[in-house]
Image 1 (cartoon, rainbow, N blue to C red):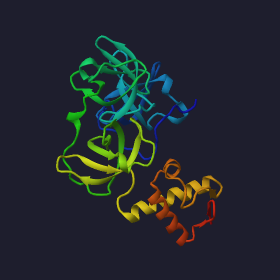
Image 2: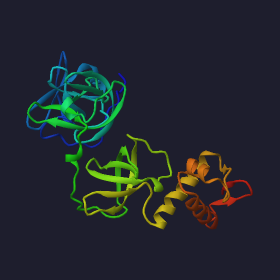
Image 3: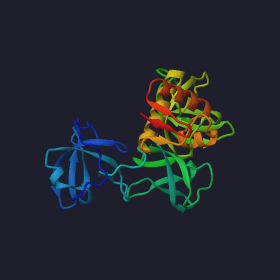
Image 4: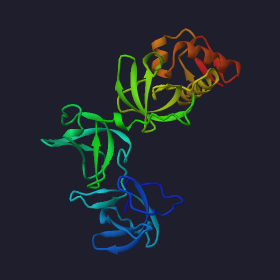
Length: 294
């Protein structure tokens, strides 16, 4: 059998308990007609259906990584597939069905993720995408998604500092730029006048903290903060693009600003400064109509 979008199986430590909505490392305990039963340290078991069983890679007693959720009959079940977002994470999901009591979105697993009507800020439409957070109903043990994410933002800024790198997902466009959720917990803003690449709602980006604000929000940048940090990243971008273009690109100091932004994802001012650094360090050569990798 072929591996089905499975998870990395490096060094493992067996889960103490089985946790819904998360990746669990469990022991292959026994084989049945329906699939393998996997066991946590506390003795609880969960079914890995036959469709996900790969006997050659899952011998009895081995530890495997699985995602746990509830099936169509609300029974906890394991899968080797990875959803687009796990519990506490955000994703940009497409609506595949709509009922009077809520919507269902595709999140990469056989059973679609439910978005209750009470968790929608607007009327959902089939085929349209929405930025949602994956949550757990503690009473029923069911996973669901919500569009009402404000209460989940962490306003504690401990450990955050300028230039710290975070993973972010683009939340919404505003007159100032783009709202983002950083590290699945912080509310932040990317400002339009500092964005030199294509950015869309649902995109996942590496961001860098510019300012930790007193209101518990973050001002962010797509480039490292500080001249040297930004320069280093800009140099790497130009060198990489030159390598991909067999060592030559039709750009000079006089190139159009919009073309520079489109190809290199930076302002003309940053581009010119970076070219100078690369020329002085003898990494590239500037010709009349192009730059050449040395």
